[in-house]
Image (cartoon, rainbow, N blue to C red; front, side, top):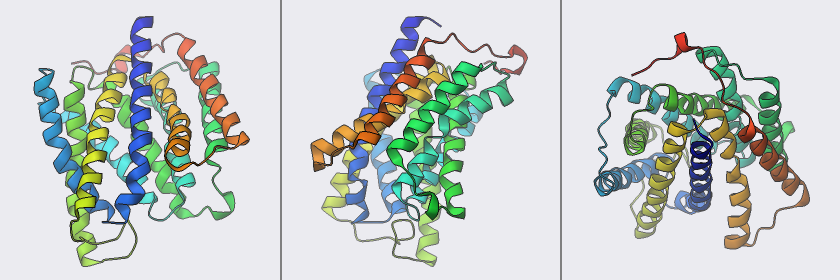
Length: 304
């Protein structure tokens, strides 16, 4: 893997984080119109045709080369993302976000446990530093922690493992096919869960049953879906060509862009402690980026 490839992967991850941090600002507006699972179903209905169109435009098929491996990867990534969204229905965003940003640590641990990678002490310290910086930005309330706090941590673990599988199992899949698999899986999960909310309805974003479809809901969901299609495709390509631990740390840039969009869109300023945390995240990412590739146990790797 060349330095140029690592630079490309970093740029893709940064671009994806910038897009996701923008479109996530509008999820609260979507929640005023419908529940989480209805939103995910419509987002999937919008996203899949967009992915097919994107594939035809760049002359890349959405059909996977290895159905089983893509299904496995899609299941882990989708489950992680859905657990993250589910946690937003019961926990403050800070706690849910802190759990999801544990993904890089899970990438390192699972790289060692599953694929026999030699991770090294400096890389461990750099990623833990990035996680500490994320906590400084998010500042979850320790006094309010409950059993539900396991949800975002589980989301981080599942998402991290899914991203690790992207390179180890799905390196020869196109980023469009990888994105298609995630959206299709999320749609299927959400279809089942919207049936559950019909039987046991509630008032929260997580438990709200099917609501009348408004024009505002449709265009907000289409906007979110279009941005997500682009971002998920970019991040899938980043994990295909880059080192998982490296790319995962660059995803921390989501916090930098979130601070920017919060100020630009809503006039919400970022305080000094948060900027210190963002600085730690950036330094951690630069340290990891300059470290050599992680050697894998060749016997543990599955090649196509």
